[in-house]
Length: 236
Length: 236
DNA sequence: CGCTCTCTTGATAGACTTCAATGTTAGTGG
DNA sequence: CCACTAACATTGAAGTCTATCAAGAGAGCG
Image (cartoon, rainbow over all chains, first blue to last red; front, side):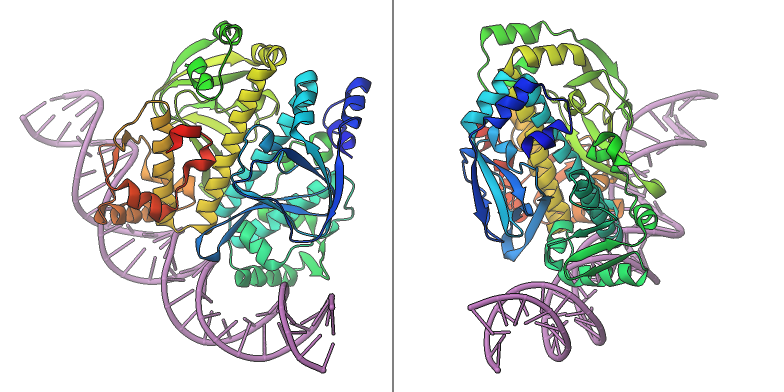
């Protein structure tokens, strides 16, 4: 899984593939809504998502919460802990998930030995940053409708890139409250915006399945331009 | 300057310091409000800020703008272009500034030869991401007053760490409209919040100089915890 | 079957924006 | 030294978006 993800970004030599395949990895199934790492922790391993959805978030005063990102199979949401020893936020499963844990030690050795792999992983954290910036645009300068539409487009692009979605349709295993916490909105308002998107025949959303009925219109409405995902040719 | 900044994060060997000092760097003075790199560009060099303030931003439809970050001397705002060839946003001076340009080629050679330096630079981009997350919290889950107060605390912490501010006082060379574009607010509302902060005797702001009159109160109000800046012991 | 979690809807309030006008400041050239 | 200009800051009034509060309806689960 990791080889496939990294290989989709840059060509890996046989030797590099070999080195990645040899990484010690402890695979563990986790229930939904289970913290993997918590703010303040000093993790000694990274987690590679093999199955399910994961999010990063922070809890604030008065029960408020901000979700920073959603992650899907192939992602390493806490890659930053390799170089920032103490976590400034938490990582938690969204759905039931399968996660592989790789010791920092092994990762550090890998990146020191293969600068090419280090560069790809570094790159991955930079794309992460690009997505944060795009979310900032959403919260700062887009309407709630645009922000939600944009997130739907983004998640589709990401899922489609790793072969987990086709035909503008995918499983969206997050509650409306989660969406609100991700975009800085109240759950009530999220609900109204979703209704609006449905009434405008842009999406359907039932049983946790999202279908984008009018991709062209939705991307136009939300000003979605996949460039910031830096996925190369697939992006179209 | 670069050695000092990087050396403040991790100990550099003599050899590493030597290698950094040998980097080819083209120093150029720039006027205020001058783009350094633009969205869509494929830069062949990075810029190291030697003097002045710089910001990263994106222009949107209808004249809207989102500022993603402010940068001060010692920062390399477009370090990401090393591994993400096409820019997804623009970089521009805020004030008159002095900037050093370093060819990607030289940087890539440096990081391939010295994995320790690569790790420090990587780390720097990760802190960048941490600041983005904190701004997301500000826009999503804090009031305008808290968000502005938080930004003031953050900039003080950053400036103080590189010796450019003391006594809770610093030059803040941004307009109220800039602040609004950074935090997702209208310039009018920024103005009102600033008045409120003044009336509560938390800050003074005149002639471009900001003074934080009550650090304890301002950090409490904005829930500012410098941990996310990952500055180590200095953070207190 | 009852319990809990999520979704849905209405009513009301508050935060923030927009529009528009005025005040302030620093710089420029006569 | 003063008129003139161009940014920037400040203020008021009106309007919009989104939050909060509250309550009911479904849906999944032991």
